[in-house]
View 1 (tube, rainbow, N blue to C red):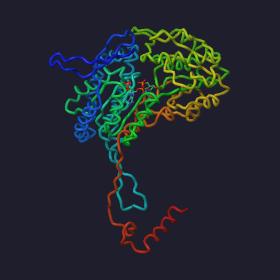
View 2 (view 1 turned 180 degrees about the vertical axis):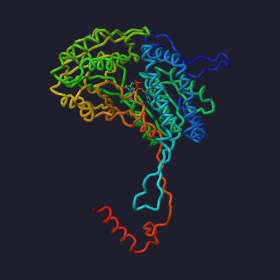
View 3 (view 1 turned 90 degrees about the vertical axis):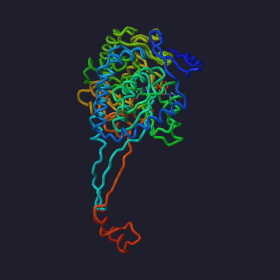
Length: 503
Ligand code: NDP
């Protein structure tokens, strides 16, 4: 759905109101909400506000911050239906999928608040034999203000992977939601303000890409970006000017490997859910399947049976919703066409399955390895099932992508072994996407899928700077770091290091 930017007149003053845009329901085109288009000056002002509030938030300490974040979590749980309704309206996804997204969010928020102290607090480390007179400690201190730029496909779960962890670590956050889901972003900030009224440390700025670009150059202390690889590169280039650190969570082309001894019905179920849920608009969705030839026919039958039953629609209990971003429909159509033109076969659906704003499930097979359906992120309810000689060839094919976000292995005997050989940030063995629901596990990719990690201990540390401190406990008999050292000091140290470390 295209969106409109309008400048209204404020009836009370007769002056032009700030420019605004509308978010639309992709199922119907109805207006869901109206939001300001924040420009560079607006963003700078919001970042200043956030910075002022951050000091007190950091000084609260872990226990008090946990209490506030717990209050927010309880509010999200109480008002889950309300926010799920808004997620549905702005993305078009089925209501239960929106609720599932929120269930995960609530658990992540709980984990981040409960574990921030354990992961980040000051701890002793061994000082080593050369510095035996020192007490050495490391702690992880908040960065200040973190700018979070999020996509529309999981408009709560994805940004909360940064928001929850950055806030728990003691930062303030300025969040720029996708232009397709600004209402969800604004709701999150409003609910935080209600639950934690004394600490205005979560702010939202809305608008188009320019608003996100303004956030990158606003002087925030880090930018956590989730979105497409192309935009991720632009974000990085703009942050490079001020050496602002970035976390970049981009797209994927995740593969599922089906080994010869896999539980085939479970693998087929996982493939179809992983590829088609949320109408395939999942960064860690299954886009490619490599199935061992000996079981490929049976696997394809099982996938076909399941995929044929799925119906997209606008009703809250449809299996799949619409394609949220209208322009993605052409990408999906292009990938199906390219696969079929290059000799691939559609065993479920085909070109006719694309009926904007909906796309019916499409299962492709025997697709040329250089087809866009294999090499590019499709982001639709399509899946390519390819036969391989054995699981090792499956791993090689899976790794031939320039993306490396998640992955899935179905194998009774070689699950972990195959998982470890996948060039990806995350893998589920004998289930699909499970890693995203484990708050203690880091989430992120390699290659064109980006770098940096949200979730887990790594996700907490991502929004901090480590500070190393040494404290002298007593004077050393040999002090080489002084102009007053004797001639023999370094000679004796060299002898010592050869004795202790030279063997
Ligand atoms: P986009 O890259 O189009 O947009 C992402 C965000 O960046 C939006 O808020 C967008 O604003 C903003 N933006 C656009 N231009 C700029 C700019 N120049 N500077 C700063 N910010 C900018 O991605 P989508 O919203 O289409 O999301 C889909 C993509 O996200 C897919 O590739 C998917 O794989 C990926 N994704 C990755 C995840 C991960 O964790 N690795 C998780 C979820 C999705 P606006 O919308 O207003 O243009």
